[in-house]
Amino acid sequence: MSREDLIKKIAANTGVTKKVAGLALSAVLDGIMGALKKGDKVSLVGFGSFSVAKRKARNGINPKTKKAIKIPARKVPVFKAGKKMKDGVK
Image 1 (tube, helix red, strand yellow):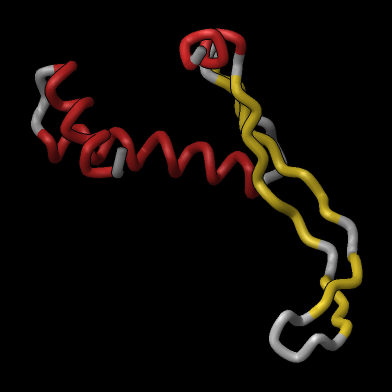
Image 2 (image 1 turned 90 degrees about the horizontal axis):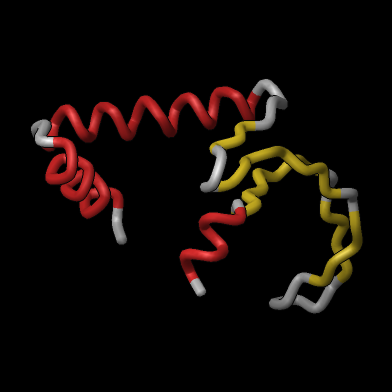
């Protein structure tokens, strides 16, 4: 499902225009990204939770040249599905 498909689904289920549904979706996603940038955890009960994990620096190999490279430490977003979502996918 693409972003546009999700906007159409929101608009159909709520009776609002696609423009309003798009703005609502953008606001939700911006809120989640803003919280993650601050290092906060976002929990949506039944759906899941978003958080930030730290990856350690590690060694890797450039597949093109086969030379060893250093991959720096970084933060990555993580999503963990909630029980309701896990049960709904079965």
